[in-house]
Image 1 (cartoon, rainbow over the protein chains, first blue to last red):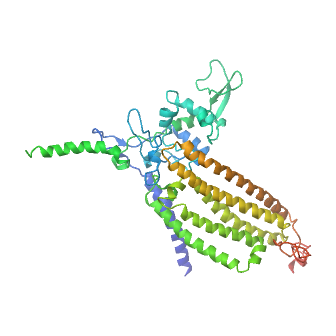
Image 2: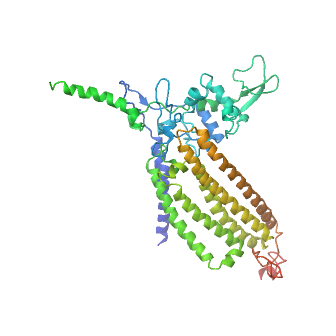
Image 3: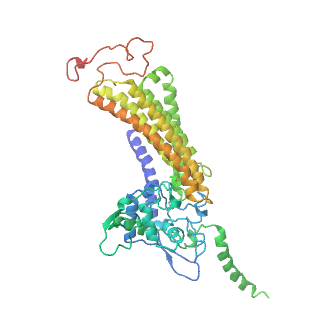
Length: 251
Length: 241
């Protein structure tokens, strides 16, 4: 083997891997075109979720505090796991307005984020639809933000969460002197007379990000790999009118 | 890349990852068996030399890691159990500590005496380092890999609440992992002290390496005869001989 062959083979070995694992996926994932919905009652909407402002700041707080170490944001397709069947992960099984909203995670769910927080392990539950879950289940009838502030301050606060392994994020909160009326966001934890615990800017950004995690909006047919029973009813309905005109000229 | 199966990434990536895993298994297994069979040709030498002992433990770690890479990624069985569970962590620690760190420890035990012209002070410190490390890493690997599979079984039990099925299954294995990290911390504190003393050139001034042999029944020093004592250090006339 000549030196030239050696250098060429070495570059090819690493270069092909680099191209396939880094460059091609990067280009493909950065070139997501909006998809037309093409279904339902004549809507011409396009599917392209957006994120902005404090939500984007919250994603940075999420990354900086290592939330991705224990929480994923990925509802796997059924060939890779059973996440879709959990009643509150891929959406809500019993949404009051929309019925069963569960669906898989798709690439558009991470649009607008600098980094897709897919996560590396699940010491805690998946957070793809945490916003939905808090509003509909954990903090039903109360203020979702307040529930989440209290949970971040002390994850073992509620008796049914006494075994939670989530770390406390008290350093994101401030202990302030009460001047005049107490804050609307003051947390219900014991503190010195005349003081109150209020969320700091990072805690507010993080909570607005976490409450924005609602990855269950309707998706175009080309992205919808949901269980067939959810599709059975709408699929049967258009079939009937299509069949009916064909029968009209026959008699 | 199989760890991201089902994620919104290009579809070919998990397949590329699976191919790479199998391609890695073959040379790792072959090279490791080759080294081990060579080293065990003279078991006494391999047993008495700190360098060879650490290196062989690292090579065994390479075999375990190569087997785990394939075992933890079988589609339809362990794949969905190991995805997002502690098994992935166990696999990474196998690669980082059971293989790489052990081989590097072996290299340090070989290189440092030659650089400092001093021999390792204590075979007991070396033995402590070895045994605490090896038991620590074994417990971590077993607890993380099999605890991760248990956690995965809980994760797949979609009709059970997450907290009871997956989170509480994992937490006891997490304790086992933390305790065995204490073993490794303990072993490395002693290794660090030993290494610091060596870099301060306070090691034994002898030409005989520190071997892990027992002095029972020998009568003289466990290091053998003292031989030529180097009192001079580099740059002097006798150091060149």
